[in-house]
Length: 370
Ligand SMILES: O=C(O)CCC(=O)C(=O)O
Ligand SMILES: [Fe+2]
Image (cartoon, rainbow, N blue to C red; front, side, top):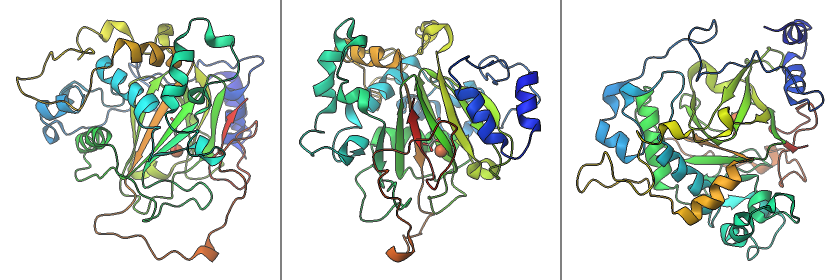
């Protein structure tokens, strides 16, 4: 550990907040040499390989969902095929923000204005030299999208009466990833997609609104990288910093399911390229049916060049993260809602912006664009 990071942690009390501030700082930027990089790891005191269950998902099933055969996965990190990463980026930018899914823009715009976010942004984003242009497109203003059981940021609950069908492709990949990680029968019921610009962060929080905490939480990252802080069960526990790169899948399960975590900083992808081209030939590239048996359908749809022009420009400066949750245990139903017991945090439905040091002031999770 660098002297700086060690001295912050040693001071105890609110180690998480201090490290959040340390990694969020703009001027001067922090020393990132203590951030664990799973893509480079040989041996690290805090990282140990996890046993996967290669028999849980056949190679054909994995391919159909856009995954490599389970035996090829690295236990602590998983690189998806770039072809499939392109699919997920396109889904997050073009498909999932569509109605009936819910997004931050719905909180202060008329329903007619938040229809076709992609269509209203694509041309502007495609234009070269558009980075200095104002005003921002809707896609650039997008901060979160919810899927399935839509998370209510005010009451911090999910409910039976706010549900729309969960996307089948995302359901499929989630079920297979969970099965490979020894969670058979996982049901993807809710998704929160987070859209990070280069100056965004996500405040210190625990994901505890789901009713069955024995079910894992899956997190898929695309585009630019992030410094992810994973703490303990107490706010005071000092966190470990690690990178989340494009294509990484993190599974929070068991003890780690209810640990404090945060994203203080988005950082450039390794080699400046979020979807590293050296993987391109071995993967299912866009428009390719390589690796699929005849007649075998895939849920991973090729991304057109026209669409990719927009997506690639977007992820040049942004990060997208999808967290997939099972809300109810098997056979479980939502409890009857007693509204008077639910505390309402007025006025944060537009987001969950953290203040400058990730401090939690009554909200479970907040976002910030500095
Ligand atoms: O963006 C990330 O990596 C974390 C997202 C997260 O913690 C959440 O959505 O609950
Ligand atoms: Fe979270």
